[in-house]
Length: 238
Image (cartoon, rainbow, N blue to C red; front, top):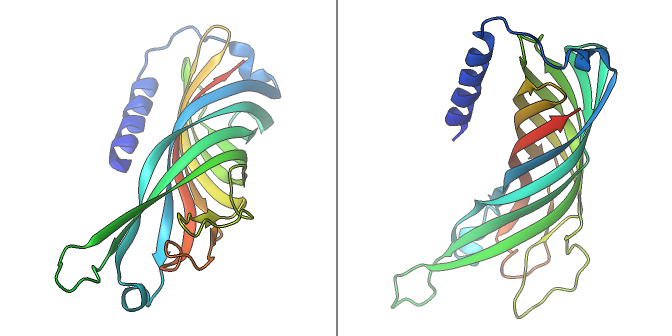
């Protein structure tokens, strides 16, 4: 998937920069210091999952991994030009919806049954994300430009059950409400007559362990969980 995304963005860049000279739309865009807009997109959320070293001998765990699940996001874009059209600071408060599925494989305790036991736990999040990123953009070629992003974000999980009482009959995975993540990305921009349209891909990686160990059968085999996600967004600025 990563190679396909890179190839797609490379082709868009090649197509844009190989254009013949055309009249430039929205010439005043780069003259303004501050721009506003909105963002719509989808995401694929996941965890970097680390089981306990003794999970096999102690809990009969054969494997544990997280399956990526699709989600969506919507946000408000504020972009500040830092003295030059090619360097900008972007603040993009976002409401995102994410889901991850943690899958377990256990050794069957029944000596007469060789089939493994399977379990799945789903972790849902409704986040307020506050990414702050530097945008390094190429100069415009006709009505096209490309850029890269680097920065970080603070995430507040409104759906976190960090302080909720555990259900011993049907236990669930607890993750922390707050998280800090680094972000990198790239995108392309197309200038229409009165607005700018962008297509953007970002990757986020959490810096801190968000997992809460509370001694339940579903949490015992796990040592650490780190958030990560891919973001694909459409951005409109005026």
